[in-house]
Length: 419
Image 1 (cartoon, rainbow, N blue to C red):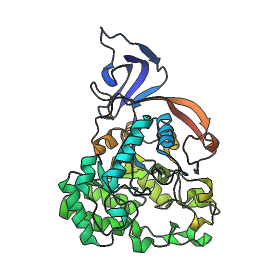
Image 2 (cartoon, rainbow, N blue to C red):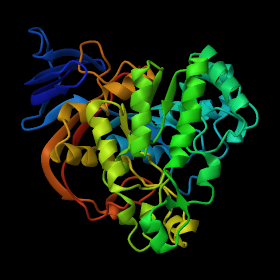
Image 3 (cartoon, helix red, strand yellow):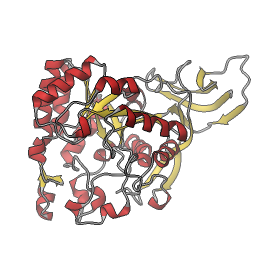
Image 4 (cartoon, rainbow, N blue to C red):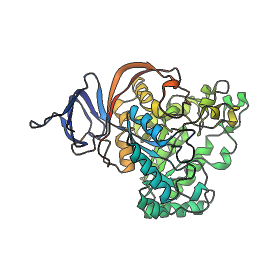
Protein backbone atom coordinates (compact mmCIF):
# COMPACT_ATOMS: atom_id res chain seq x y z
CA UNK A 1 0.00 0.00 0.00
CA UNK A 2 0.93 3.67 -0.24
CA UNK A 3 2.10 4.84 3.18
CA UNK A 4 3.12 8.27 4.46
CA UNK A 5 5.18 8.71 7.62
CA UNK A 6 4.82 12.29 8.79
CA UNK A 7 6.42 14.71 11.28
CA UNK A 8 9.31 12.45 12.28
CA UNK A 9 13.00 13.26 12.63
CA UNK A 10 14.58 11.53 9.62
CA UNK A 11 18.01 10.14 10.48
CA UNK A 12 20.07 8.52 7.74
CA UNK A 13 23.74 7.89 8.62
CA UNK A 14 24.54 6.91 5.02
CA UNK A 15 23.76 10.38 3.66
CA UNK A 16 24.06 12.43 6.83
CA UNK A 17 20.39 13.37 6.62
CA UNK A 18 19.09 14.76 9.90
CA UNK A 19 15.90 16.76 9.48
CA UNK A 20 12.21 16.68 10.23
CA UNK A 21 10.00 15.70 7.35
CA UNK A 22 7.91 13.06 5.70
CA UNK A 23 8.76 9.75 4.11
CA UNK A 24 6.60 8.22 1.40
CA UNK A 25 6.45 4.48 0.76
CA UNK A 26 4.92 2.70 -2.23
CA UNK A 27 4.91 -1.03 -2.97
CA UNK A 28 7.40 -1.84 -0.25
CA UNK A 29 9.99 0.71 -1.36
CA UNK A 30 10.86 4.25 -0.36
CA UNK A 31 9.30 6.64 -2.85
CA UNK A 32 10.45 10.00 -1.48
CA UNK A 33 12.35 11.39 1.51
CA UNK A 34 11.66 14.80 3.05
CA UNK A 35 8.27 15.44 1.50
CA UNK A 36 5.75 13.43 -0.47
CA UNK A 37 5.30 13.98 -4.21
CA UNK A 38 2.39 16.25 -5.06
CA UNK A 39 0.46 13.44 -6.74
CA UNK A 40 1.06 10.91 -3.95
CA UNK A 41 -2.14 9.60 -2.35
CA UNK A 42 -1.44 7.67 0.87
CA UNK A 43 -3.72 4.84 1.90
CA UNK A 44 -2.32 5.01 5.43
CA UNK A 45 -0.61 7.70 7.46
CA UNK A 46 1.68 7.31 10.48
CA UNK A 47 2.23 10.31 12.71
CA UNK A 48 5.84 10.10 13.92
CA UNK A 49 5.82 13.32 15.93
CA UNK A 50 8.56 13.25 18.57
CA UNK A 51 10.07 10.09 17.05
CA UNK A 52 13.10 9.20 14.98
CA UNK A 53 12.62 7.55 11.59
CA UNK A 54 15.68 5.44 10.76
CA UNK A 55 16.53 2.54 8.45
CA UNK A 56 15.60 -0.81 9.96
CA UNK A 57 18.34 -2.27 12.13
CA UNK A 58 20.49 -5.06 10.65
CA UNK A 59 22.06 -7.62 12.98
CA UNK A 60 24.79 -9.87 11.56
CA UNK A 61 25.46 -11.69 14.83
CA UNK A 62 22.47 -14.00 15.35
CA UNK A 63 22.58 -17.64 16.41
CA UNK A 64 19.24 -19.17 15.40
CA UNK A 65 18.58 -22.47 17.13
CA UNK A 66 16.49 -24.01 14.37
CA UNK A 67 17.09 -26.56 12.96
CA UNK A 68 17.80 -28.93 15.81
CA UNK A 69 17.46 -26.94 19.02
CA UNK A 70 13.89 -25.76 18.90
CA UNK A 71 13.65 -26.19 22.68
CA UNK A 72 15.81 -23.06 22.88
CA UNK A 73 14.14 -21.01 20.15
CA UNK A 74 12.63 -21.24 16.68
CA UNK A 75 13.12 -19.14 13.58
CA UNK A 76 9.57 -17.86 14.00
CA UNK A 77 10.01 -16.82 17.64
CA UNK A 78 13.29 -15.02 16.96
CA UNK A 79 11.97 -13.28 13.86
CA UNK A 80 9.07 -11.93 15.92
CA UNK A 81 11.44 -10.78 18.65
CA UNK A 82 13.61 -9.06 16.06
CA UNK A 83 10.88 -7.18 14.25
CA UNK A 84 9.33 -6.01 17.53
CA UNK A 85 12.73 -4.57 18.43
CA UNK A 86 13.34 -2.60 15.24
CA UNK A 87 15.47 -5.25 13.51
CA UNK A 88 14.34 -5.82 9.92
CA UNK A 89 17.18 -8.07 8.75
CA UNK A 90 19.45 -10.53 10.50
CA UNK A 91 22.22 -12.82 9.36
CA UNK A 92 22.24 -16.21 11.06
CA UNK A 93 25.38 -18.18 11.83
CA UNK A 94 25.80 -21.85 10.89
CA UNK A 95 26.18 -23.52 14.31
CA UNK A 96 22.77 -25.20 14.32
CA UNK A 97 22.07 -28.95 14.57
CA UNK A 98 22.69 -30.04 11.87
CA UNK A 99 25.24 -27.42 10.88
CA UNK A 100 24.33 -25.24 7.91
CA UNK A 101 26.98 -26.71 5.62
CA UNK A 102 24.97 -27.85 2.60
CA UNK A 103 22.36 -26.36 0.24
CA UNK A 104 19.66 -28.44 1.98
CA UNK A 105 20.13 -26.60 5.28
CA UNK A 106 20.34 -23.24 3.52
CA UNK A 107 17.09 -24.00 1.74
CA UNK A 108 15.41 -25.07 4.99
CA UNK A 109 16.22 -21.81 6.76
CA UNK A 110 15.13 -19.79 3.74
CA UNK A 111 11.80 -21.61 3.58
CA UNK A 112 11.17 -21.10 7.28
CA UNK A 113 12.02 -17.42 7.01
CA UNK A 114 9.66 -16.92 4.08
CA UNK A 115 6.89 -18.87 5.80
CA UNK A 116 7.18 -16.72 8.92
CA UNK A 117 7.62 -13.49 6.99
CA UNK A 118 8.41 -11.28 9.98
CA UNK A 119 12.06 -10.51 9.24
CA UNK A 120 14.52 -10.81 6.36
CA UNK A 121 17.07 -13.53 7.14
CA UNK A 122 20.42 -13.92 5.42
CA UNK A 123 22.46 -17.07 5.87
CA UNK A 124 26.13 -17.37 6.75
CA UNK A 125 27.01 -20.99 6.05
CA UNK A 126 29.82 -23.16 7.41
CA UNK A 127 33.40 -22.68 6.29
CA UNK A 128 34.19 -26.36 6.92
CA UNK A 129 32.02 -29.45 6.94
CA UNK A 130 30.16 -29.79 10.21
CA UNK A 131 32.36 -26.92 11.48
CA UNK A 132 34.91 -29.63 12.29
CA UNK A 133 37.82 -27.69 10.79
CA UNK A 134 39.00 -30.65 8.72
CA UNK A 135 37.34 -30.51 5.28
CA UNK A 136 36.19 -27.48 3.31
CA UNK A 137 32.49 -27.05 2.72
CA UNK A 138 31.15 -26.87 -0.84
CA UNK A 139 31.21 -23.08 -0.95
CA UNK A 140 30.21 -22.79 -4.60
CA UNK A 141 27.06 -24.82 -3.94
CA UNK A 142 26.34 -22.86 -0.75
CA UNK A 143 26.63 -19.57 -2.61
CA UNK A 144 24.37 -20.85 -5.40
CA UNK A 145 21.82 -21.83 -2.74
CA UNK A 146 21.80 -18.30 -1.33
CA UNK A 147 24.45 -18.13 1.41
CA UNK A 148 26.05 -14.68 1.63
CA UNK A 149 29.16 -15.69 3.58
CA UNK A 150 30.93 -18.47 5.44
CA UNK A 151 31.97 -18.74 9.08
CA UNK A 152 33.57 -21.12 11.52
CA UNK A 153 32.05 -19.56 14.70
CA UNK A 154 34.24 -20.48 17.69
CA UNK A 155 35.15 -23.89 16.27
CA UNK A 156 38.89 -23.82 15.48
CA UNK A 157 40.64 -24.58 12.21
CA UNK A 158 43.97 -25.66 13.67
CA UNK A 159 45.66 -26.23 10.32
CA UNK A 160 46.50 -22.75 8.96
CA UNK A 161 47.29 -24.25 5.55
CA UNK A 162 43.69 -25.53 5.38
CA UNK A 163 42.40 -22.15 6.53
CA UNK A 164 44.42 -20.45 3.80
CA UNK A 165 42.83 -22.76 1.22
CA UNK A 166 39.41 -22.00 2.67
CA UNK A 167 40.01 -18.26 2.39
CA UNK A 168 41.19 -18.59 -1.21
CA UNK A 169 38.14 -20.71 -2.07
CA UNK A 170 35.75 -18.24 -0.43
CA UNK A 171 37.41 -15.33 -2.23
CA UNK A 172 37.01 -17.11 -5.58
CA UNK A 173 33.26 -17.37 -4.89
CA UNK A 174 32.86 -13.77 -3.77
CA UNK A 175 31.94 -14.87 -0.26
CA UNK A 176 32.86 -12.84 2.82
CA UNK A 177 34.55 -14.88 5.53
CA UNK A 178 33.37 -14.32 9.11
CA UNK A 179 36.05 -15.29 11.62
CA UNK A 180 35.98 -15.27 15.42
CA UNK A 181 39.53 -14.48 16.52
CA UNK A 182 40.25 -16.82 19.40
CA UNK A 183 43.31 -19.04 19.71
CA UNK A 184 42.00 -22.48 20.76
CA UNK A 185 45.07 -23.38 22.77
CA UNK A 186 45.17 -20.18 24.80
CA UNK A 187 41.40 -20.23 25.35
CA UNK A 188 41.10 -23.95 26.12
CA UNK A 189 39.00 -24.62 29.20
CA UNK A 190 38.51 -20.93 29.99
CA UNK A 191 35.22 -19.26 30.83
CA UNK A 192 36.17 -15.79 32.14
CA UNK A 193 38.66 -13.04 31.41
CA UNK A 194 42.07 -13.89 32.83
CA UNK A 195 42.38 -11.23 35.51
CA UNK A 196 41.69 -10.41 39.15
CA UNK A 197 38.00 -11.35 39.08
CA UNK A 198 38.62 -14.80 37.61
CA UNK A 199 41.39 -15.33 40.15
CA UNK A 200 39.14 -14.34 43.06
CA UNK A 201 36.35 -16.62 41.87
CA UNK A 202 38.68 -19.49 40.99
CA UNK A 203 37.49 -19.56 37.37
CA UNK A 204 39.75 -20.70 34.52
CA UNK A 205 40.74 -17.64 32.51
CA UNK A 206 40.96 -16.72 28.83
CA UNK A 207 43.78 -14.21 28.34
CA UNK A 208 43.49 -11.22 26.04
CA UNK A 209 46.32 -12.83 24.07
CA UNK A 210 43.86 -15.53 22.91
CA UNK A 211 42.26 -12.85 20.74
CA UNK A 212 45.37 -10.97 19.68
CA UNK A 213 47.42 -14.05 18.83
CA UNK A 214 44.60 -15.30 16.60
CA UNK A 215 44.20 -11.89 15.00
CA UNK A 216 47.89 -11.74 14.15
CA UNK A 217 47.80 -15.08 12.33
CA UNK A 218 44.49 -14.38 10.60
CA UNK A 219 45.54 -10.93 9.41
CA UNK A 220 48.66 -12.47 7.90
CA UNK A 221 46.44 -14.85 5.92
CA UNK A 222 44.19 -11.98 4.81
CA UNK A 223 47.27 -10.16 3.52
CA UNK A 224 48.41 -13.32 1.72
CA UNK A 225 45.06 -14.25 0.15
CA UNK A 226 43.27 -10.91 -0.24
CA UNK A 227 40.08 -12.58 1.01
CA UNK A 228 37.32 -10.24 2.20
CA UNK A 229 37.24 -10.98 5.94
CA UNK A 230 35.01 -9.80 8.74
CA UNK A 231 36.25 -10.31 12.30
CA UNK A 232 33.50 -11.09 14.77
CA UNK A 233 33.13 -10.01 18.41
CA UNK A 234 36.25 -8.05 19.25
CA UNK A 235 36.67 -7.84 23.00
CA UNK A 236 40.11 -6.40 23.77
CA UNK A 237 41.89 -3.05 23.56
CA UNK A 238 44.81 -4.66 21.74
CA UNK A 239 42.41 -6.24 19.26
CA UNK A 240 41.03 -2.80 18.39
CA UNK A 241 44.58 -1.52 17.93
CA UNK A 242 45.45 -4.37 15.57
CA UNK A 243 42.31 -3.76 13.50
CA UNK A 244 43.07 -0.05 13.32
CA UNK A 245 46.53 -0.87 11.98
CA UNK A 246 45.18 -3.41 9.47
CA UNK A 247 42.71 -0.91 8.09
CA UNK A 248 45.44 1.74 7.80
CA UNK A 249 47.41 -0.77 5.71
CA UNK A 250 44.46 -1.21 3.38
CA UNK A 251 43.61 -4.82 4.15
CA UNK A 252 40.07 -5.90 3.08
CA UNK A 253 38.81 -6.31 6.64
CA UNK A 254 35.97 -5.14 8.87
CA UNK A 255 34.93 -6.04 12.40
CA UNK A 256 32.15 -5.91 14.96
CA UNK A 257 31.57 -5.86 18.70
CA UNK A 258 28.78 -7.46 20.71
CA UNK A 259 26.84 -4.67 22.36
CA UNK A 260 27.05 -6.23 25.82
CA UNK A 261 30.84 -5.76 25.66
CA UNK A 262 30.24 -1.99 25.53
CA UNK A 263 28.50 -2.07 28.92
CA UNK A 264 29.54 -5.07 30.99
CA UNK A 265 32.98 -5.99 32.33
CA UNK A 266 34.53 -8.84 34.30
CA UNK A 267 33.27 -7.15 37.49
CA UNK A 268 29.69 -7.99 36.45
CA UNK A 269 30.37 -11.67 37.00
CA UNK A 270 29.73 -10.82 40.66
CA UNK A 271 29.33 -14.06 42.50
CA UNK A 272 29.21 -16.43 39.53
CA UNK A 273 26.34 -14.75 37.60
CA UNK A 274 25.89 -17.22 34.75
CA UNK A 275 23.90 -14.65 32.76
CA UNK A 276 27.28 -12.97 32.24
CA UNK A 277 28.92 -16.13 30.92
CA UNK A 278 29.76 -15.16 27.33
CA UNK A 279 32.47 -15.95 24.78
CA UNK A 280 34.64 -14.04 24.27
CA UNK A 281 34.43 -13.25 27.98
CA UNK A 282 33.63 -9.89 29.52
CA UNK A 283 36.92 -8.04 29.74
CA UNK A 284 38.37 -5.17 31.79
CA UNK A 285 37.31 -1.53 32.11
CA UNK A 286 40.24 -0.60 29.88
CA UNK A 287 39.06 -2.99 27.19
CA UNK A 288 35.51 -1.64 27.36
CA UNK A 289 36.77 1.94 26.99
CA UNK A 290 38.85 0.96 23.95
CA UNK A 291 35.88 -0.82 22.36
CA UNK A 292 33.73 2.28 22.80
CA UNK A 293 36.46 4.41 21.25
CA UNK A 294 36.69 1.93 18.38
CA UNK A 295 32.98 2.38 17.69
CA UNK A 296 33.28 6.16 17.92
CA UNK A 297 36.17 6.50 15.47
CA UNK A 298 34.87 3.83 13.07
CA UNK A 299 37.59 1.24 13.65
CA UNK A 300 34.78 -1.08 14.73
CA UNK A 301 32.32 -1.04 11.84
CA UNK A 302 29.34 -2.87 13.30
CA UNK A 303 27.52 -3.39 16.59
CA UNK A 304 25.75 -6.75 16.89
CA UNK A 305 23.59 -8.51 19.44
CA UNK A 306 25.54 -11.81 19.45
CA UNK A 307 22.09 -13.28 20.09
CA UNK A 308 22.25 -16.75 21.70
CA UNK A 309 18.94 -17.81 23.24
CA UNK A 310 18.93 -20.60 25.83
CA UNK A 311 16.39 -22.46 27.89
CA UNK A 312 16.44 -21.64 31.62
CA UNK A 313 18.27 -24.85 32.61
CA UNK A 314 21.26 -23.91 30.44
CA UNK A 315 22.21 -21.22 32.97
CA UNK A 316 21.60 -23.18 36.18
CA UNK A 317 24.77 -25.30 36.42
CA UNK A 318 28.01 -24.16 38.10
CA UNK A 319 29.40 -21.19 36.13
CA UNK A 320 32.01 -23.05 34.00
CA UNK A 321 29.41 -25.66 33.01
CA UNK A 322 26.70 -23.22 31.96
CA UNK A 323 26.16 -22.48 28.29
CA UNK A 324 27.62 -19.13 27.20
CA UNK A 325 25.53 -16.47 25.53
CA UNK A 326 22.89 -13.78 25.93
CA UNK A 327 19.47 -13.47 24.33
CA UNK A 328 20.25 -10.12 22.78
CA UNK A 329 17.81 -9.22 20.01
CA UNK A 330 15.48 -7.31 22.30
CA UNK A 331 18.22 -5.29 23.99
CA UNK A 332 20.22 -4.32 20.88
CA UNK A 333 18.33 -1.07 20.21
CA UNK A 334 17.74 -0.06 23.86
CA UNK A 335 21.43 -0.49 24.66
CA UNK A 336 22.38 1.42 21.51
CA UNK A 337 20.16 4.29 22.61
CA UNK A 338 21.83 4.15 26.03
CA UNK A 339 25.21 4.46 24.29
CA UNK A 340 23.98 7.63 22.61
CA UNK A 341 22.61 8.91 25.92
CA UNK A 342 26.05 8.31 27.45
CA UNK A 343 27.81 10.40 24.82
CA UNK A 344 28.67 8.27 21.79
CA UNK A 345 27.83 10.10 18.51
CA UNK A 346 24.25 9.35 17.50
CA UNK A 347 24.91 9.00 13.78
CA UNK A 348 27.96 6.77 14.32
CA UNK A 349 26.00 4.39 16.54
CA UNK A 350 23.10 4.28 14.08
CA UNK A 351 25.54 3.78 11.21
CA UNK A 352 26.95 0.71 12.96
CA UNK A 353 23.42 -0.74 13.06
CA UNK A 354 22.19 0.20 9.58
CA UNK A 355 24.44 1.30 6.70
CA UNK A 356 27.58 -0.60 7.72
CA UNK A 357 25.92 -4.03 8.11
CA UNK A 358 23.90 -3.46 4.93
CA UNK A 359 27.11 -2.90 2.97
CA UNK A 360 28.73 -5.95 4.53
CA UNK A 361 25.79 -8.14 3.53
CA UNK A 362 25.42 -6.54 0.11
CA UNK A 363 21.78 -5.62 0.61
CA UNK A 364 20.10 -2.51 -0.73
CA UNK A 365 18.58 -1.70 2.65
CA UNK A 366 20.15 0.39 5.39
CA UNK A 367 19.45 3.80 3.83
CA UNK A 368 16.66 6.37 3.65
CA UNK A 369 16.82 6.85 -0.08
CA UNK A 370 14.28 6.73 -2.90
CA UNK A 371 14.13 3.29 -4.50
CA UNK A 372 15.53 1.47 -1.48
CA UNK A 373 13.56 -1.24 0.37
CA UNK A 374 11.24 0.32 2.95
CA UNK A 375 12.82 -1.48 5.90
CA UNK A 376 12.20 1.18 8.53
CA UNK A 377 12.15 1.67 12.27
CA UNK A 378 10.29 4.43 14.09
CA UNK A 379 11.92 5.02 17.48
CA UNK A 380 10.30 6.77 20.41
CA UNK A 381 13.40 8.13 22.21
CA UNK A 382 11.43 9.16 25.30
CA UNK A 383 9.61 5.92 26.07
CA UNK A 384 10.83 4.85 29.51
CA UNK A 385 10.58 1.20 30.49
CA UNK A 386 12.22 -1.62 32.41
CA UNK A 387 13.31 -4.95 30.93
CA UNK A 388 11.22 -7.81 32.28
CA UNK A 389 12.47 -11.18 30.94
CA UNK A 390 8.99 -12.65 31.38
CA UNK A 391 7.75 -10.31 28.66
CA UNK A 392 10.49 -11.06 26.13
CA UNK A 393 9.35 -12.51 22.81
CA UNK A 394 12.48 -14.53 22.15
CA UNK A 395 12.49 -18.22 22.99
CA UNK A 396 15.41 -17.44 25.27
CA UNK A 397 15.12 -15.11 28.23
CA UNK A 398 18.72 -15.39 29.36
CA UNK A 399 19.85 -11.81 29.87
CA UNK A 400 22.02 -9.94 32.39
CA UNK A 401 20.01 -6.79 31.69
CA UNK A 402 16.89 -7.86 33.60
CA UNK A 403 15.61 -4.92 35.63
CA UNK A 404 17.65 -2.34 33.70
CA UNK A 405 15.88 0.95 33.07
CA UNK A 406 15.87 2.12 29.45
CA UNK A 407 14.77 5.27 27.67
CA UNK A 408 13.66 4.71 24.08
CA UNK A 409 12.56 1.74 22.00
CA UNK A 410 11.02 0.80 18.67
CA UNK A 411 7.46 2.06 18.31
CA UNK A 412 6.84 0.73 14.79
CA UNK A 413 8.84 -1.47 12.45
CA UNK A 414 8.12 -1.71 8.72
CA UNK A 415 9.35 -4.52 6.49
CA UNK A 416 9.75 -3.62 2.83
CA UNK A 417 10.50 -5.55 -0.32
CA UNK A 418 13.31 -8.08 0.09
CA UNK A 419 16.61 -7.02 -1.46
